[in-house]
Image (cartoon, rainbow, N blue to C red):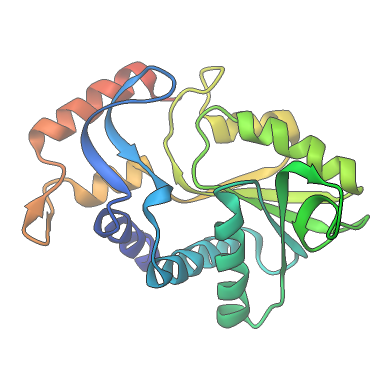
Length: 224
């Protein structure tokens, strides 16, 4: 596993973004873990988060794209932090773009924040996590409604590797339906392998009991 992936797993834990216990998800599933990207709230956290995203995007898509699109609302700070990191790490100026939930009809009019979209722009979409693919269903019409853009791919922070609408995980479904590449900074498989019985700052986050709960959860909801 790449060094930045290991560091990102520890970063999620230290930022109180990734937790283990008993949680009820929006889907109604009872999950032994929970990921909340809204817990990244400080300048230092957002700076590091942008760097992790930038490294993963570079590994998956290189530098041949023009726009980083972050769907409202969580995608807005993600896109801003990541384009700044991309400039710093790879000396590549990528523009950020996000959507508004409501169209603005005065001043800076329209549905977009940041850069305008032009025909032929190569776009990477950035999100925190994708479980069902619903956000992409909303994002694609917005992008295509503004210009004839080329969506290069989607990058999320964590691939939960759970069944979406089919037996595949949500990222695999998105690849199939929309014909775009998808990637994640880390997968839950990598998280579990790295943290299992590992002492992290005096705690073992995934001991045998938690591992058994995770195994049971993925036996029921894991994607093929």
